[in-house]
Length: 203
Image 1 (cartoon, rainbow, N blue to C red):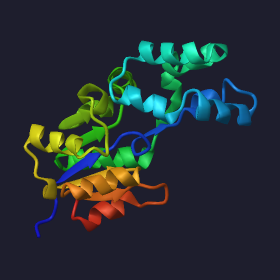
Image 2 (cartoon, rainbow, N blue to C red):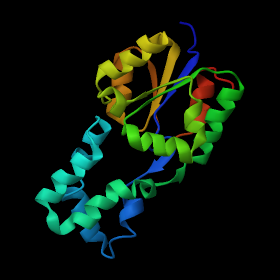
Image 3 (cartoon, one colour):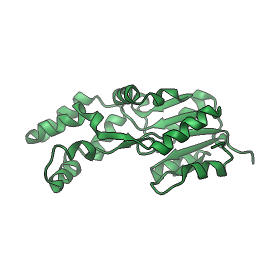
Image 4 (cartoon, rainbow, N blue to C red):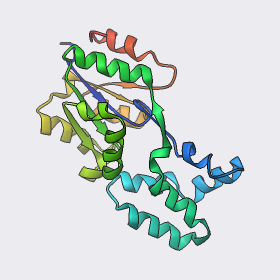
């Protein structure tokens, strides 16, 4: 079997350090109260619909209607979204830049709101350097739906077996393997450079 030639990155918690708690720790004095809010008001399921393409003003209005007492904190998720990103995974970004310097084709599939991705690119210019990128909010598709992987392959003329996909979500990794990609589950303890060297990449 030939070695893969192409890298496909996820962004959140692979390249960017994203967590709504980065913002809400500054808004709640009580950690338990913050956790209740994130479990019951600005939930994962609510936020993922913006990653699917739902308009942010609509999303905020829906929650404010149901939780009027929490309106300032709800609006903060949208209006102060940039504070949910505390920075980057320096080693992983450096690795990405080395791959680019070596001429390795590099792409991205990310579950990300379209408007928030524009903000992220302004703050982190390396995000604009991919050879191609699929943003879920723009496509109205979410990982781990196989269709979003096939969209990348079809749009950019890639072969699944040539690609190594890197993601922090196990279901997303499994889905990539199911469509024929190689895949790396990017957990905190991983040596990503070593994993890529094992595939033959020059890092």
